[in-house]
Amino acid sequence: MSRSTDHLLKASSASQSIFDPREVPIVSRDSHMPAVEQSLLTPDGLRLRFTQEKQWQAEVTDENRAALAREGSVKAGRGNELTPAAVLIPLIMYQNELKILLTQRTAHLHDHPGQISFPGGRSDPEDTSAIDTALREAEEEIGLPANRVEVLGSLPHYLTITGYQVTPVVSLVNAGHSYHPDEFEVADIFEVPMAYLMNPHHHEQRMWQSPQGYRRFYAMPYENKFIWGATAGMLRNLYHFLKA
Image (cartoon, rainbow, N blue to C red; front, side):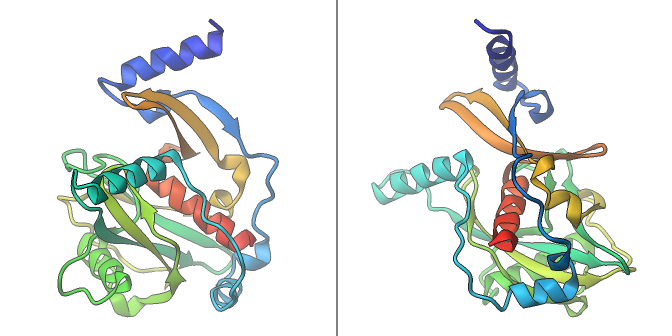
């Protein structure tokens, strides 16, 4: 058994009791892939890109495959359907750069406790669209009023292992807003330079052994924040969309 394989198995065994994604070994980085051009990482560049129809394909992660298998079980009469949800990806406009706003969920939540996420949640019956859901949730979770948000468009659904069909809604927000987090759901609000997250040099693939077998997931560590899982998967799709 190689040292790397032994490390993987030890991390996998530990993860089945207390899963810490930071301890899961890195199996690859996408340093060979180019970063998104700086001209696209501007408000005008993004506005233009969202008006263009270019052929591109969303990346399918192991989490998506597991969710699709679950959906197949639903069609076969087993299990529950995926729950519609939406998140807001707020791109904060500073004078010389854009930053992506993220939150850290509180540790006591049932779904994705303690993880880094975008503001968002499941759709309510009164929501007329995924955009409505994303805007409502952003106001409830971080106190960002809908009238401060310029919606650019949506990315393809992202399917999560916890049974959600998430629509990422990309938006622009002026810097300088004072946020008011919902203390029950949000432990922290922070920003990461968009140029950092749109550079695959910072995109790690990690692999662990789940009860269903080996699974890979993306991680994008930034300073003391560990962005991974569904949030990293949606950021990967934003990268592919901008590089198309």
